[in-house]
Length: 353
Image: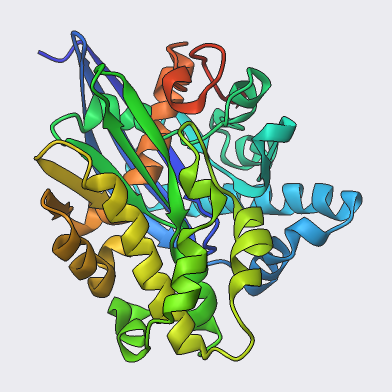
């Protein structure tokens, strides 16, 4: 028998700028056990002006960035409103990730834009956003946030691997505590090189198959200091722009750079996964649809690599943000100190009525 049911809209907009995922979902609590159901999910493309502004957001002036926070919040609000217009679904709240402009937790700074006040005003639905700031204020990385959902909704897997703009993983350590961290850049870089070939992304890894691996570049990438750091740790676009791109020589072709980065991703992923217990590893995120990446991973790891169904691939992060919203409303910790390195577990999220 289900004790409680919660209806939510989860909104996920990642650093890869490949659209906004919106999902209508229900969560059921039976004793201490949680289950979920995805009612409907849809990915919305960015209007060109929003895309270009987000892409340049780090370079905007203070007033321009403040304006973009409002514009983007309005876009998200209108997007959710149109999504709900086609559904017989009345959510208790909207939980929105926002778009990350800056993520420098070591400097006490993380900024996700997409005004929750605008979303709430447009949809007339309670809106929760800014899930990371409390954790950063408590000395944590503010990321990753998904592991609490992995812990409570997907605990039949030895690990949950997300291949989005950046790859991240969540698993239980030998002390039975949830551990999670960003492993390495993924689609953020792959999309960058695909776009230089006039493609939005490298469909099924077809471009990557055509290139040759540059062993010297691969060695430089794998020797980046971040990979020797112990968790908790997290990545942002600054890492790619300041440490990854400068390593790529001017005379290398985009195709060879792409092939090399595929091998780099696989090296970093497999080095983590191979140290886990035997069992199933759930793979979600846009990279789960990249045949080349999955083939390499299956060849490199003895664990069973399980690519989830398309609905979960597309909407797992949005689903879990909906779940983070449930925990926020119930005032249950939705950010784990064991994951982020904060001084304590905390309840993240700012609520706009």
